[in-house]
Image (tube, rainbow, N blue to C red; front, side, top):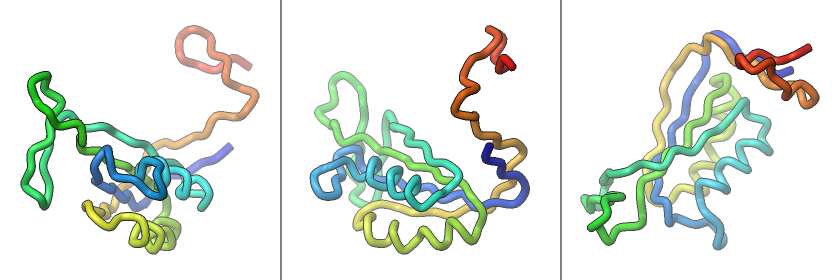
Length: 126
């Protein structure tokens, strides 16, 4: 079981949904590299509207022609582990924004591989 509590560092990477790395989605490459690096976790969030350095507004509204929506990849782990991962982000993110925030982890408990069953109230069965 993986546990992480206390002081941590959050890295958030903002890129475009259509950004790629060797013909696969950039956000997917970042998540897979974070996993390979043994980081505590990574999540990808798709935005519905936004703009960046290009000042072009990308939106999911029906009448918009834009399909390159903003994507945020959020990774949280200890400061040392996140900072050790930054050179990989430097290699991957040629256009976008990478930010670091100090944060405090209140609760982070990984699921055991064989304990996926719940009692219907969100609590795992023993």
